[in-house]
Length: 287
Image 1 (cartoon, one colour):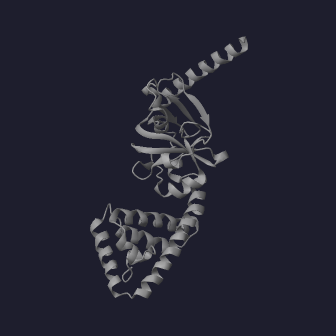
Image 2 (cartoon, rainbow, N blue to C red):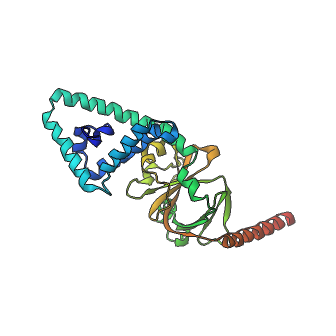
Image 3 (cartoon, rainbow, N blue to C red):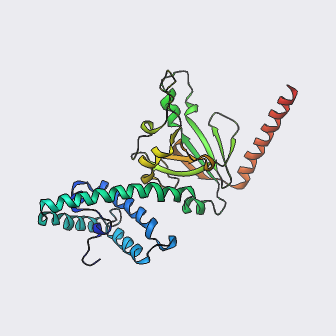
């Protein structure tokens, strides 16, 4: 690391370091760092020395924790441009383009495989039998129905209860939750990073513009995956998926509140669900 600029460790050229603003450059550094650690981290059978080098380089370029270091190394790295010939710059850009294509493909293959087996962070999150209740603003319903005056605002809000085994879900105006098995929390994305209404599927047969609450897997990989965070943060888009049919990624909405609830509260909710199911069954038998 003594003679090697940390940007070099991540394969970034002085040209791209100069052209990107600080925030965009830092996002790129983080994305490349994550991808490379999927290859080189010793827990995944990688090279411990290379993994350590990546960690040290990322510490020096951590804009959030060490902004002065980030700016200093960026300044020194950009200064190299004045010593390069036009031909070497062109060749470096070609190399950089090849690297970025490689990272993109790697992100699709390796990182998605990692997600399909489940984020370790998510597993740890539920390891102590935590039960989390989310209040969510359903942005898809709002886009689809906000121009209808007769629609009650309660339709735009819903509650989800997340457990390790299942998820409970209901609209704010509904009395009972629906129990959903094998529906998994995938992660969250900050609202400023994506515009989901551009990415979500829509039904071309519908006369009116109606968005679905999901996007296909490839779209999610290409446009959203690098921003995915396995934490339940407020004011973020929250995504789920069905492991048995992993071709769609579902957007539940924007998290506006989170709280941890106790087992006794969950038991009461489940008991109400049982009563509801019994009543429904009895009515069906009478018919």
